[in-house]
Length: 231
Ligand code: SAH
Ligand code: DHB
Ligand code: MG
Image 1: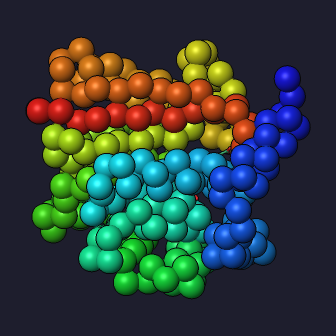
Image 2: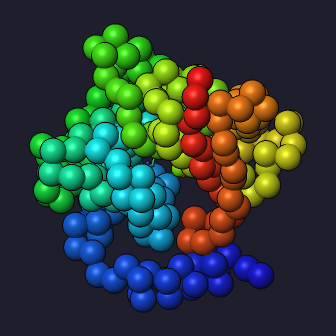
Image 3: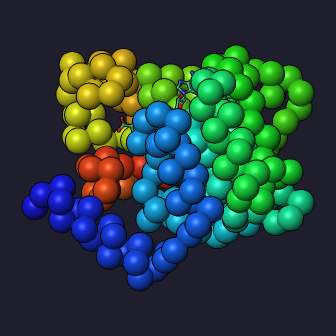
């Protein structure tokens, strides 16, 4: 089973279930033209994010890792007209690309981009009294997932859905000494610690969680889906 067939099946799925999507396709073209890395979620994964946010009835969403705004637009589509999405991005240049695409997609008033390292912008958000958010998508630098998860819990309520991307990495998470192709060993260490924190929550009864392995146009990876319970 090869990566080519995973990609071909992703195209088949998108052809049947997603179809043409000018705003999102333009967002990807702009990202690529501006030299941003091609590491956004796939269309099928983006649609899953939108559907999860709809099933959750989310009115407020927090995203960590905006890149060019691709996943942001998918998530924003789930929100009611008076909904709000805060997305955190460290790279000012990426945030500018995202800002244009998000506005073009019609979400300029719904989405707030906060530029800076998320471990700096998260405490600012908390100090302002932001949250609790209905859904939190963790997709920034993987080495900091443990810290991001702690902040996600602070910004959540019983019933908040937390999703964490890139938690399988070609199976490299099995090996504590593995080097992730993109982030070196810090990535794998961070993701493994994220699982340990989730496990503590699951053991203590304050979190219910699973992780699903995925294949597709972005290779072999996976995501965590967690539901926050009573703290
Ligand atoms: N969610 C996007 C992809 C995000 S890629 C999508 O699917 O469309 C990861 C992003 O996290 C990159 O844009 C990267 O610049 C950003 N990032 C890396 N370190 C960060 C940090 N410390 N704080 C906030 N964002 C960070
Ligand atoms: C990569 C993929 C991602 O989904 C992400 O958020 C960061 C990096 C990658 O494949 O390098
Ligand atoms: Mg990701």
